[in-house]
Amino acid sequence: LPLIYGGSGSHRQRALQALESVGLAHRAKHKPSELAGGEQQRVAIARALINNPSLILADEPTGNLDTQTSRGIMLLFKQLNQQGMTIVLVTHESDIAAYTRRTMKIRDGQIEALE
Image (cartoon, rainbow, N blue to C red):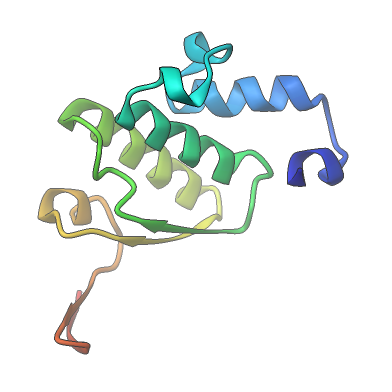
């Protein structure tokens, strides 16, 4: 619905572009139940990006993805951040955290380190 009410551009074209950005344009006509868990995760990321928000809150966005796909998603996030989008990402994986410009470590509800 936000895409429809956003009102700019072709809805179908923007949806396909978002799916392309996460490597799923070829699965555009599939129902969610026909997609694997990692594919569903990437569709969720595409949905979050479709209206070009200024802020993305991503909780374990690569949790269900293989290493290569995770790398692609993190490179996409890095590119979007360089274009001015703010991305707040939560992860338990140090290799994923390594893609970020700033890292905050929290232990037992307390900020332990800012890097």
